[in-house]
Length: 301
Image (cartoon, rainbow, N blue to C red; front, side, top):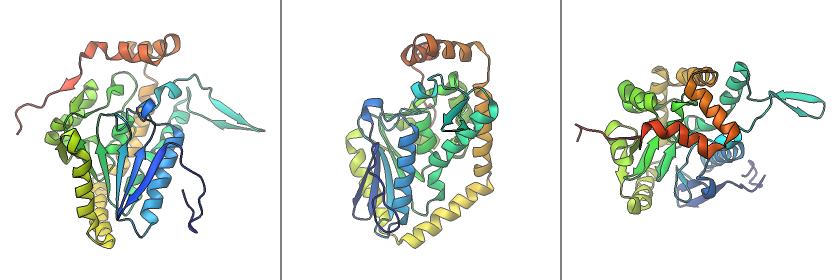
């Protein structure tokens, strides 16, 4: 990323930053981990978004994922790695997400500063979704201005089955209260084709055509002067604020922290499985009662 003088501050490690014409593409680039979100990747994504927003040669931003998936969610292996309640650096102690409600809320509020960065930008951001877009991946995708998705992609928040509620909540604003509840009550996923039907995405295309379709849309939008794009984006975003979107993000983080303290059998089983067997077994046991967990949208064209 560069400072205001154009001097490189650091080379990004977990994202790619490319510019083609007036379109910047920011790509999550940890395909071996299915682009699972960790602190460094989120920081690099945020910095790249701010750089694209600052540059006069860029009108539109596309957010994508390398490899088979857009983003499989937060790095649960790191989140459940047995961290303590404090971190010691030199002579000072710093709080870290652990057993205490307020520290957990503090951690998620800090994370929201990254996942909700799109709302602070003046330029449109298109999420180009393929493969899996799960859990934390939906926090970011649904915060984007437009979501264009592959027909066979899978979008959902399976972590609601035992881990908490989405800490960045845009579900109700995209698909309404009934579909938001349907998806969160079960943690089920739906295909890109069905995501368009309920409002989680604006367009769905065959996976082989996704790159070309997003490129064409981004270039079409980029043909509009950036000052006007900012006008259009910001008036809609202000309308979302009047509908409570910003307040709901703060409340969602608090409810997620509350959910983390739940002591129901499924929550406790997941934590025990993580400690005794690791992430793979914990996810298998969490998801087993739900079968394939795929929602099919019926009765809508």
